[in-house]
Each structure stands twice: as structure tokens, then as C-alpha cells.
Length: 420
Image 1 (cartoon, rainbow, N blue to C red):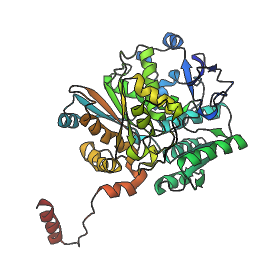
Image 2: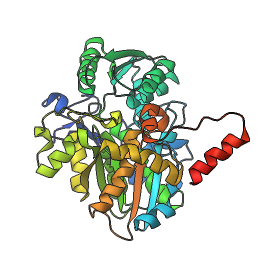
Image 3: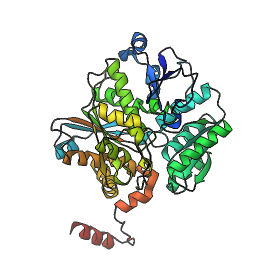
Image 4: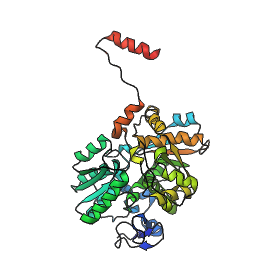
């Protein structure tokens, strides 16, 4: 293993393991014993200069801060280097200092989860794994299938049978072996774990494989480097708003920020605001009631934002830690607010987001109404997935197109109606 890795630490008991001794979770706590990669920051600081980061494509610019050897080959698809759009008009309208939107729907399979899958595929190749697998509501699965296709690594995917058709189609296009599970995401998750143990497949499951959040943390590196406006210089915003389901993205963002702070590349920790759908708000409720995340009980999750639908968030310990340790908060938005946010975001800055991603934009407005943001603050809103992932939901949020004959008089009639 790379010299800058100290080990894998259990988030529950603190036990440290060598990466060669465990693959996924703490043996003492089973599937709940999520592990965290612990780094030797002095070693990194001695060998990596922030003003001399390699000119590598996308997220691999930060390879020296990731849990793989420098010599490990990486998937060919460009992951990361997604745009951070300043939105001065939005900032002025809502009355805060600055707002940026980080559009991770621009990744190759159209979601932030490509970052996790890119790292998992690199590790699978390094360890000569023959098949990789995951359970997903769609985006993580597509990410794994797409990144694996680029290196001809077979995949087996478990998704709920009611996943959006576009996401299922995407999996099949990439050549994945797709199993539609007649049940919830949590059912698919458990079946995937059972199958991976039985067949010896390498499992990417979120909140189970400790390296998923390590890939996702690269979005925090990019945000801070892009805000500075200078390559090799990093600057922290005041807050980052993140939609939350399993909790793996917000924990990844937190891990990336912790890395930068430990290295002295940023001078403060931004607040993290986690946005959950009202019908899938297990973490919000636990935070509100001050319940230890390990004691959380499954809920009956129901929301049109399938990518953040989770009855029992798998990365709940690290997600709760991300919010509490940064002085942040959780909040909820309704499905109606999520739908309204899709065209509102698109018309504000030209970014088309799927429901789980538009939830963060709805969360920006909810955070303002709840007094969580102050005048003059600089806020990043993380857009995690592209709207073409779920056209059905987007259509519910907009009106119908006008049908006309090839006659200018009919065009004039429509224009008069619209202006009236």
C-alpha cells in the first residue's frame, strides 16, 4: 500500500486496520462498521506541493492525495474537472455575497458518482479483480458500469425494479448484467452484499466500500481550487449545500475539506448543509432529535428523487459527523419543492438537474428562509446529476409545448397568448 496511508479506521470503535487485512468494514461491527482511510499528512506535505500538482486529467490531478499508488493505471474516461459556475444574479436576488453551482452532471455518466467508481475501478484493476458489483438506485450503478466498460471489466448491477427507465437503459447500454430487484434500494443493497460474498465479486456498495467517499472527496478539492481562481491555490467557501441520501457524498465532501485543512491548503472548514427529501429524511430526523446515527432505525422512504431515497442511510455515521463537525445542519424539502427547483435552476443558470440534484437548489432557498445563511456569505451548491437521468420527473415540473400547423398565423396566435 502507498506510504502516505496509515490505515483504515472504524468509525464506531476506532480500531485501526491495515488496508491489506480488510476489504470493506470493521470485522467487529459487520456491515455497520464503516471504515475511514487515515492519511499521514506529514508524509503528503513532504512529497506534494500544492503549487506543483501534476497536469493530469480531471480528478487524477489529486492522485497523490488518494489511496492508490502513483503507478496504478486509471480508467480512460475523463472524470472530474467539472465546471463551477458563478451565479451573481442568483446571489443578488437572494441577498447573499456569492453563489456558485458545481455541475457534476458533466461527468461521463452524468453524475458525481463517477468519481467514486473511477477510484473503485482503478483499485479493482490493481488487485486483479475479475468482476465488480454494486447496488444502486441508478447513478452509482451507471457510474460503475460506464467506468468499467472503459477497461472491459465485467459488472453485475442490482437496482430496484422501479428505478427510472433512463437509468436502467444506461446500464444495459454499458453492457452491465442488470438484476432488477423487486423491492427497495435497501433490499437491493443486502442482496448485492450476499451475492458478492458468495461469488467473490469486488463490491462497490456505498457506505460499505471505504474507498467510495475517497473518490467523491475530489469534488471538494476542485471546488476550493476553482474558487481561488488560480491553479494550485485553494480557498474555502463559507458553506456547501449537498443533497443527501445514503450520506456518502456529504461525507466525501467533508473528507476532502479535512484533507485540505490538515495540509494547510485552506484556512477554515466550511459549514456543510445536508438536504434530504421530506419522504426520505432519516438523517435529518436523527440530527433534529440528537439520535446517535448507529441507533437509527429504518424508515419507509418514499420520494421521486430516487437517488437520495434511503430507508437506512449506509454512510450515516460519517454523514452526521460531517454536519456536526462543521457546525452545519440538515434540512428537508418536499417533492413539490424539488420539482419546482428543476426548471427554476435551469432558467437561473442553464443547468438541467435531476430531482436529487435540484434538491440542493431547493435547499438553498429553504436554508435562507430558515436563517441558516447570512448576508455576505459565499456558498457553493453541489449539483450531483444531470436532468436527462429522469425525464419523467422533469416533465411533471413544466407545461406542455404548443402544437401548430406550418402557418405563421398560428405562431402569431401562440405569441399573443403568451404575451397576454
